[in-house]
Image (tube, rainbow, N blue to C red):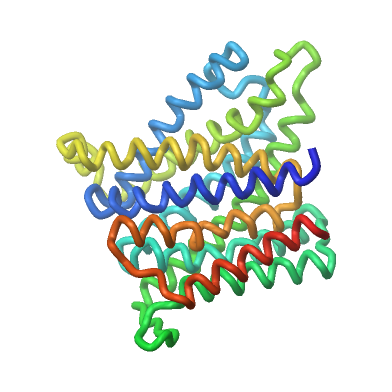
Length: 311
């Protein structure tokens, strides 16, 4: 199917919109590291069920040491570093501004794709990426009186946002390397659905390593008691369950699938539409008015997306 990778990437943006809404709520109730540990443990459980049903093995079957190394590296960069920065940015500057800095992921992914994979982007693709990113920026930088851009953020929040964009972009490329190697070593006698289940198996490796990484950080900071406290917060646990389903289980698995069918830079750009998609839910949940500048940003972003399909 033509443009399959781009279509999947758009679905990822929708999934991550749901994730961002509930990650903000969960992080404020449980703390960023507690939320990350719980969501990755839950993700591993759900992915084990998916793999058990799909290929008859509740674990990443056939993955060798090299696949584990690349996917583990992507987990440490994308989850432990990137998501730690992202979830903490929600606590400092909120989900909308936190997602603003995720627009840095596409250029980071493009640079990492060039350095690691030797990928190239045509001039038209770069133009489409620029148009899409401009639309995202217009949408998010719309706060302020008289339709003027007014952004005043704490330095800590800005640094966390920069780290989140860097981790997301580089982690995506490392994931692609690991998954491509994983695909090459699948034996001929493997179940016929193994190819379809590959993104879920790869995500499970990342979830296991990422969860372990966060547990180590919590132990070093002597915050493991926060996990026990979270058990007494039903609402926080519900938020974590929802963001787990739409984040590590559905969203991340689809993101790995997207980079298999298109370049990491293009896939990451389309996934970066989450800040645009989050406008309407935020308006409904928090009774915020969508301003003309935000609608203009949506229109520009959609024009950029259309350029990917018309190239």
